[in-house]
Image (tube, rainbow, N blue to C red; front, top):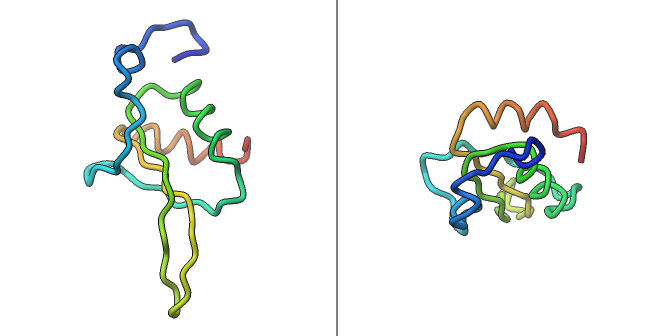
Length: 88
């Protein structure tokens, strides 16, 4: 983790934040109330696995709404992120 001064090989090689959402990642859907930059900065600082952050369109009764999809490779990071959502 960045805040503990540990070097993460995924950070060094630029492989930590993905541009696509792999099907084996665990997804969390959030409203766009928070800044994506604040969420990404928190993930970089507090977690160590690979992740994806991007928009997703939800269809509800014929209406489209845009939300933020956050996906994590490690299931334990999903739990930690979910518990820390109120910090954004």
